[in-house]
Amino acid sequence: MRSIKPDEGILYPLIFDQHSVTQVRLEGKDVLYSLKNGAVHYVGDTIAVYDVLEIKGDVNFNTGNIDFDGYVNIKGTVEDNFIVKATKDVEISGVYGIGGVNLIESTEGSIYIRGGVAGKNKAKIKCKGNLYAKFIADAEVICEGSVYVGFYIRNSRIRATQVIVESGRGQIVGGLIDADVRVESADIGNRMENRTIINIRGFNRELMKFEMDGLLSVIQAKKKQLSEMKEMLKSFNKDAQKSKSKAKKIQQEIFHLQEEIKRLESQCLNISNYLKTPGEGAVIVKNYIYPMVRITIQNEIFEVLKKDFGPTYILRNGKIETL
Image 1 (cartoon, rainbow, N blue to C red):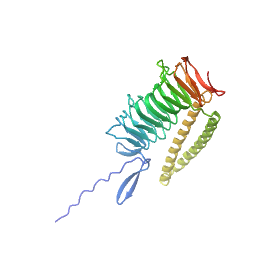
Image 2 (cartoon, rainbow, N blue to C red):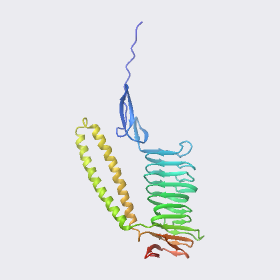
Image 3 (tube, rainbow, N blue to C red):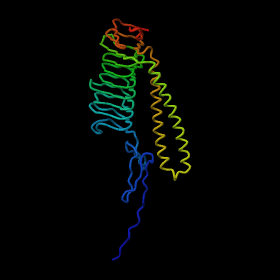
Image 4 (tube, rainbow, N blue to C red):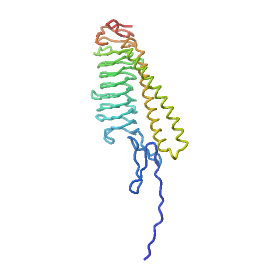
């Protein structure tokens, strides 16, 4: 009997993105570990972990509810009664928008809804940043930033820092708009005199300026730190073999620092926008405001009794006045 040796196999290397995946030798085999939370992506033969989850169609029974640590990009829509939660931005690109969803939430970022919200009196949307939508109807919105709507808001409850309807023919009709700084629309109310409630809590202008100065100081310090880290990385790259692990760590720190600077700059831009508001809280009407609209600014109440063109309501000497 003669033993026949097998041909030697070909040892193929594992190809992976070294910024998001690391290779560890365990018990005679190579194991890949993710360096961060995210979704696995295959780019050709390369394995990577990105903090972006892309849903190529709709969120429905095929995908189930989404709860993701990162960015979520949905190419279709979110069907009724489903939930989408993410730590970063959520983008829903379907042209028809969303309907009676259970919840769309971004705990740290903004939400972008291309087609608008037809909420069927049950949709709820929550975000740390801003909300952008073509329209909002019959929905509840809780937003720490600003709500920017293309065409109209109808019969909805919205809590935000400011609410802006951008179209020259935009409308806010029915429901409750509860904002800190500003509510702005072409029309508020309508000829049918639907009850519409606008509440402005008001803001402290000097305190907001102080906050902005503090943010600018932090941004300047972080930019200086970023510049120093980039110089340090250059020195490590000159001796790549000895300093590979250190260079990788610095690259990750640079990325996180860049993201933090971007977030702080966005905060400054928002505050700069708020400071353009007249007074310490305002309701700005570009075209018409109609009867049955109630405006409250810092607990002072004004009932609109007749149709008016282009008023801006502010609080002056303890009373609501028009500019």
